Image (cartoon, rainbow, N blue to C red):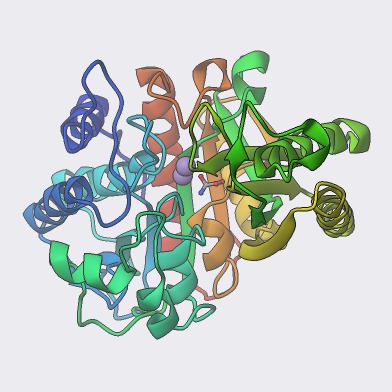
Length: 416
Ligand code: HGY
Ligand code: MN
Ligand code: MN
């Protein structure tokens, strides 16, 4: 089956339309998981799926899965990603993978083509993990690695629970999680890093995803008067938090290689100019493609946090918010992505993903691979996130070609 061309304008228009759900004044999107804006985005996406003649199911964690029948009753080839965003989100992170999947369906439908295997397009709940940890929560439940009840009980940074919020927005579905079991999963996503843009390359062939470690540290000191308390008598939680923040950054520089480290959130209590902080709650995000180095970094940060707290007369508690080991995608699928991109005359580069993705979870249950397109200046989780229309269209065309090969292959083995 030769591949028809996707309709680039329709894809671009759909990204703009979905981007209107939770649009920020001046650009960008805020569609935190299970918020009212997330509901708007879900409603829009489900309506789009139904308009394409797909049957849509919503499971207990709010994952939406739409299926476009094939000529045979076989496990579907799945495309998809997420439509929740961080507070300072862009138009493309996650959304591209879902909407390009729907563009593939629309293109095949326009051409009157039906693949042997059914095709599915999914949006997985709470990929970002910004409001409720861990990230990739919906796909983690989908693959059976996080019990649904535990996910529903999770409290977010604003005190709400996942279950209550899903109920409130009307997406606590009844479909069993993990259904349908899929043949394979292909996720198109923006790189969110600088590599493809800097090298002027249109397609990234993603070989895997690096490991992720998220830890929350709670430091309890003693609130006291900023003007009367001698330095030697202070138990300053903010100072201890600042020491840990600096240590984490310097550790990544000291390790080098692919080690990265981020303190993205520090909450001080009472957070007032003339009160020595009683409490500091900070999050540490460590990542590395090398699991042994990541584990070593975790231990170093924990030891330093405990030593620093003790030296400042501050107590230190920690809680793991997410912990995923590096994953490698299916080599046959990775080769297929590379081959199909090159067949389109597109230059490619093999690289690991710095960001976490739902594909990281789906790779536990089926052959999985990802396609990257460039992020201008490597910007993401920033309202100025941008990918050129040309690259968006090229990425969607590669997705279509890969999916056609997968869905029409005569045998179950991944030889093409
Ligand atoms: O944090 C991540 O890598 C992803 O955006 N959830
Ligand atoms: Mn994403
Ligand atoms: Mn993201």
